[in-house]
Every structure is written in C-alpha cells, then in structure tokens.
Length: 220
Image (cartoon, rainbow, N blue to C red; front, side, top):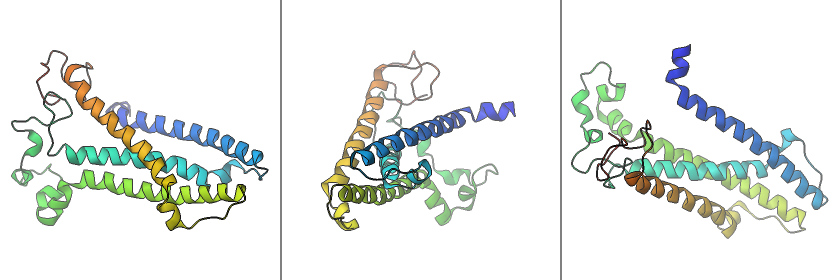
C-alpha cells in the first residue's frame, strides 16, 4: 500500500486538490448565486439544486474547456515545433520521442497497439492529443449548455425574453468567456517554455538539470 501511494502520489495529490477546490467552488458559487437571486427577488435554491444549475455548469466547464484546449494543443504542437533551450521542447537534432514504435513490436512489454500494428497503432500514436481535444470539445459543449441556461435565467430575472441555443452560441457573451480563458492558458504555456530556458527547479522533470547550459534542449 505504501509503495502504491508513493508510485501514484502525484496523480493522487492533484486529484485530491482538484476535488477540494471544486467543492469550495460549488459552495461559494451557491452563495453567490443565491445572493444574486435574492437581489432580483427570485427564489433561492438548495445546494443540491445548485449543482444541477447553469450557473455551476457554466463556471465549471468554462475553465475545464480552456485547460484541455491548452494541454491538447501543447501535446500536438510540441510533436513538430521546437524551442531551443527549453525543457518543454524536443531536442532539435533528434529526440527519443520520434523513434519508430514498430521497432518495438516484438517487445512483450510494449502496449498492445504497438504489438498489433496497423490502424490500432496509427490511432494509438496520437491518442493523447486526441483524448485531450475530445475532453476540450465535451467541456465546450458543457460550457455552452450551462451558459445558455444561466444566460436565460438572467434574462428572466431582468424581465427579458430567453434566447435560443443557437443565438447564445453566436453571441459575444459565450466567446468572451472562452477567449478570456484561452488566452491566459497559452500565455502560461509560453511563460513555462521560455522561462525554463534560463530558470531551473531542482528535482522536477519539467526543468532541465540545474547545471545544464541554457542552450541545452529537453529535460534530460
């Protein structure tokens, strides 16, 4: 048990922090939503009902969408774009990640798609970026549906008519929410890629070794 906890400590810690922060978001969002309802003389809602509301869905999926877009784009773009000196880049003169997986087809420990080859291998070769971009698409749909429900709730609270899903999809409101998150994610990736050329974090695989020259590319 202790070894399993050690071997999975990073994912377990990240999952634990995520669940705690999501719970805190839901509590504070519930209070904010009820305060807004009271201000507009609308009935407040229970915590359980709030978890099914557009307000909670919009706030949650709006952020998930930008994170999955950033990570999916990052994984896909680093397959062929370089940044000399960055730990986040492949080595310009050849990198182990470019190795032909078919050379390991006879390795009994290789993943099944590698040993099987063909279409299974073609799909598996790009499965990480595909999965992240699919999660982005699903999160965007969640943002769209949650945002539409919340927008119409606000319309009714102000005595205005609700709008169709298509009208909300083509509205500045939805895209303003998305763009303000997307740009910040790509700024964060840019900062990590560039700062990692000159700065270090000892012990982290996201950093070059502390004594590595600035021009050295890759984490090791």
